[in-house]
Length: 153
Image (cartoon, rainbow, N blue to C red; front, side):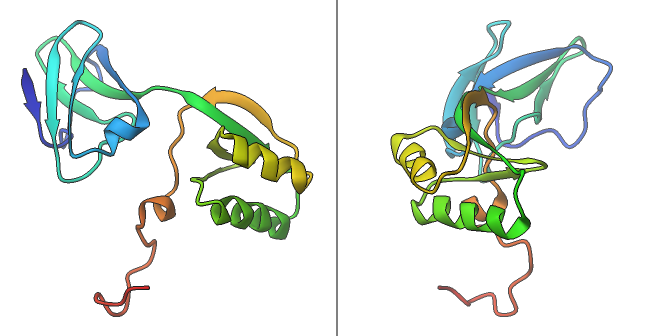
């Protein structure tokens, strides 16, 4: 098994890609095992999560790329005012559900409680499958540096 501790800092984009398919939850774990489409096995032990599209290994003939598996999601088209979109995001977050804000839409995992909430507040949505990558806020990362590194809520 090939050990992986971090994505490669650079790779050759002209080489063919061999996918290592993995679900989102495994990507966030510190340690897991996976296999590429060609059968090569890898063991992952990292301090930081890997991301969809990360190149983690390269040979003379190919590069091995993390490809997150699509999962069931609810897509909420953002055909509303920004304040309404913020309210929808707040309501979903109040369920402690993860959220991904993308241009023109919000994505959240397809779970019964979220469907009930969206039906109750009369927000249109459609069910589908997509690569779900919740925003930095869902992982506890701040987009701005904190003035006091010890400050916590």
